[in-house]
Length: 474
Length: 95
Image (cartoon, one colour):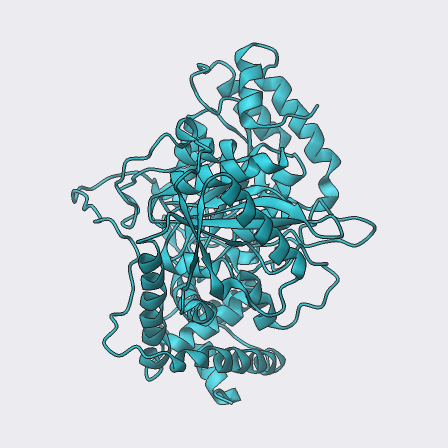
């Protein structure tokens, strides 16, 4: 059985054509048939049956009643372990539920499992996980493809139809880039729209929760559930959350779309530029006006990000010391040796690399030259967006510089891997919302994504434009 | 070359991560190339630019300073690798 969307499945449930239990059994079967993709870190049929019992008698007013949702294993969940894909949290059982997952539970959704990710969300291919690579479900002919990252398991779960929605987090592109690689919709809302409470922290000034789904309407339904103020996150905004799904409107007449010239970069395939061109033409046909804009500091976004994110990570990950929870090295001779061995054995290579870079750029004598400098450039990048948004409604760019790449490709050059985020990082630094939707394919038939960026707290605008563009492929 | 083996080991000590010789060498290469790459920020004139630390564009509300009791120590201690009589236990620090 295949369900097209959350809204379709919810209608079937409302009309008593299917039960919560039947839905759960359908998805358990699908997940068991796709174990080779290594999408889930945690999957337990009994836990799903427990949730069915708690959910089946709920009122149908709960907008996600019975809807199968996959949760990135960076969100703390009380009934399932949480690992952040790291050995250091291998046996961690949170004592509390994250804000975002609690909101989903409150609306009656069923968590099918916890999805794989790059260790502590540090990566762009879901290949730094302690639990092994996730394979993109669109892979063919013995050529396993990367699902993107860091929320690669969640994007792959939606693409493989193992759930109808999934949570993700996006620090520099970790929702939008895997959405593009797996051919699904993924939105990173404005920084502060969703509480970070209960999400294992990577870079706190950038981390933001968001969602994946099969279409734009479903993403708008999910986002209005998980957004909202939470006093346990001091950066959570107290803004009114619109009813995104009810307000969806594909009428773009009079809208002005910015096309930034700096997003035409060397080494990007013609196919990606062609898809971008097609989307521009389509928006024009729908009545929008095109405006060529400039975001002059774009090229500095990646180096800025790779100072700020590791700096914050080195501070956030200091808590993993083997004392209160998680892995502890065996037989240390002293307390200091316990810390050093625990962290050496518990963290993977990419995480260590970032902690050390972060420690260096924050250390005495280098703080001003690296960290403070990066924060100043970040201000210029944020100002670029404020300036262009004074006379355009949203910005259209490609999501990623390539389609999903092969997991067999050599991936030992960190900077080359970092370039995956070239189109997604600027919006993260500016804290503005971004959505990626599938829009066309390359010649191998792999999906390519297009990204829409909006003003702070203006998710509705990019949902509407994405909703309009999505119709081109229906 | 920004970093040498001594500096890497010093940073690793600050970060409380033990590195094998091989690991240190590997990281030295990667970190030097990353630091060379981020150096391009020096091209940008940032005189009189305020550093951006908090991106939230709305005014962040304050909460009431009230105590709450949400987690039990028993539950929290269950995650501890080593515990003793209701406390976290670590190797001896005083001789």
